[in-house]
Length: 204
Picture: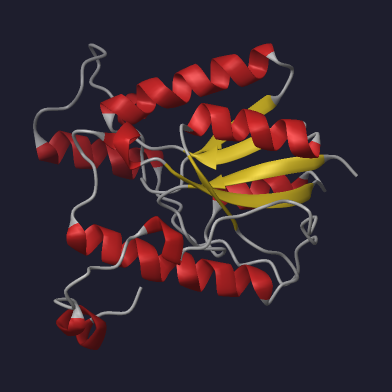
């Protein structure tokens, strides 16, 4: 069976995850990985509350994968080097991820896709967070909409398919020889427990 890396980013879920769905539809063995590279998101890197969310969301994702026979690999960046190392260790032929839209991350992702394609690895990227991506809707002149009402009418003309995708019931096992950092080692939780109110009021 060919192997695919599914690179989890801000889509830390099994349900409604187009990248994971596409990899499974191709009947590929799945290697789930989260690559911690906060410096690559600058100047939009995470604050304390976002790191709290990330810690708990990674923990829940790891539990969800474990209950389905898989496991989450936690690696540290740079993202390109981490993916190249994981491809070398697994022989993965595909990498799937859901797109992000911050300018710095779009530039990074384009570079990663170019480098991996050059090495013969197929990259498949998906939309997991927007009804319409910015480049899919434009005025008759080809410009971005600047007024909401015409933009909304264009959305309605296109039709909105927002039905969520189901989570898989079972996933392929991940080679036990593949190393992984622990979520705790990422240092995401605050040293001073100011997050008690978040824990009481919100659940990732």
